[in-house]
Image 1: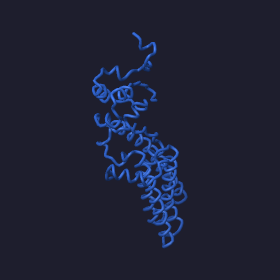
Image 2: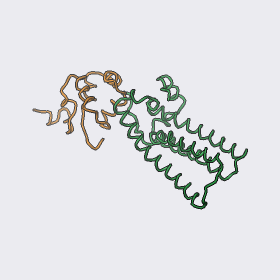
Image 3: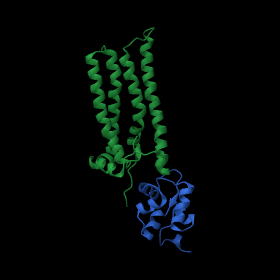
Length: 80
Length: 171
């Protein structure tokens, strides 16, 4: 994890939509290992790449990225 | 450097055991071998200096260089496999993470090269302090410059080999 932690839900969104790392990487024009580094939180994307990732999944940026850890599915934080 | 195709990278991978390029321990062992290869190249000017140029110095120098090249070829193959060929790729063909990683490694290698060349300059300076005019065989000067050039080219690869994190899998 990098010092300036940015949490993301790329892996969740990818699994939900049945997209492989290679497919996502090809769509974004990046190396498939970069997707892995992003998912592991070992690389924070540039604003441009972050916007393209959100655009790929057709969701707002804050659905994919957050400065705070995302609540686990079914946890209190998910209930509104 | 000519960029390797995916097929060529796969061939390089097939020629190596995965423990060499897919584990930090393997890559760091390769980096250590690379340092040894570089040390052999730095031995050449010392040999040329201490053994008066002639057949003996020539063959020792050529032998050391040949061994260093073979070792370095293995180290470079490990690096090609570990980076999926990105090490041979032009900057314009790297994504933003790969580019950031290359620049970080180049900056670190620049610092290491500075120490190596500074150390070599200090060593020669100390030798020069004992004589008014430093006289030595021209072959020593030539091999010294070759070792300095090789250090400049090789150290970024050794730093990369040492620092690369384990790559995430395909899925």
